[in-house]
Image 1 (cartoon, helix red, strand yellow):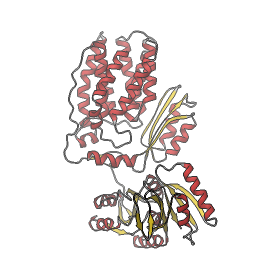
Image 2 (image 1 turned 120 degrees about the vertical axis):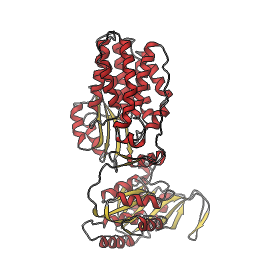
Image 3 (image 1 turned 90 degrees about the horizontal axis):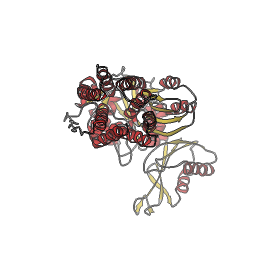
Image 4 (image 1 turned 90 degrees about the vertical axis):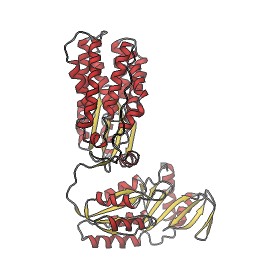
Length: 524
């Protein structure tokens, strides 16, 4: 058993880049090969520490696979190990009956783990494995050889069975990874090397558009619960109402693994906490991974269907995931952009189309994006109104005034009017010595920009923030958005100083997630 684990892990490791290149799903766990290898290494690590008996090694490998599972592929692979563990729980002999049972349970648990099983995936191969194992025979080695032989045609079928794979012109990454694991198992049992076949990882030269489930606005949430106090099936059912396309909740009474794509990550974490203390927590932005995946592969994952066009929609250019969440909550479609990463005219046109509205209002939220927005409005082939917001603070104020029930022209007018009255403070650090707006700023100094003009600078970022805020004598509400990498201690320090400096103003806090700017303040 241990030799089989070592051989299968080594075989997957030798082809991990190939499996990663096959992946066409733009999710944070999108490196399928890396995720499966992480799972295999963890299974092998636990197995090496177990007593040298078949039940102990199988149980340890299953525990390690579940502990190390990453992404859909890793979680599904861990369920294959679960089937092996249960089949070998009470025997020191892996005979034909036990092997057949291991394959049957692996197929069953893998399918049960997935809320909406799709064709042309790893699951296709588990079915082929079960069919191959069902053949009459009395020799375990012959059974393994037949399972491995059946894997090739099953993996090839995934290209045609799965619409996303077909659009990209590749076989399924997870199925290929599992094929490599099976080949390694056979090699470990026989001691013979199986030649590594070459798989074409890019079959289409033109960018492919895939009709896959949309993860727009969603997060990827993963965590473990040791010794869950509630039934796993009950937890899964409760999480289903908050899940997007993926709800994987697997494990047993000793350990539960959760992997969910959701618009409400806080709800998934809350439900997990009702079962016990959570650990190994991962929460990632699926939008960011989608954009990165499309840039890297040219594979554009599009929603499979669109509803009727709305009367009016809004596209808001935002500099961070926190601002994106706020924009969505106010009814807008966020487009990532801002300083150093301004969206192109083409990206704005695509966002206008994706908004699916008869009239679209664009909030550039940066003076350097306004021209591109105006160009996009001319070529988008839709009715577009550009409200020339010069910073994200103006954009957030304008969104508060968005009323989709009003006439589109009235909506644009109201949003422009509110934006004109709004003010924004941005706090960053100078990257070089310079004289800006009559102020001599030294490299490394904190500086505060009020509506784009430097009004304060110095060593203390919070002091310059407060100095800028004191200029807003008519403000009633200040919303402080924290930047990427700004910890809670810095945020609370800034809030306390801001409240002390402006005692008559209400100070609210939100996470903006913007790079380069530690704090952005929107004044109303």
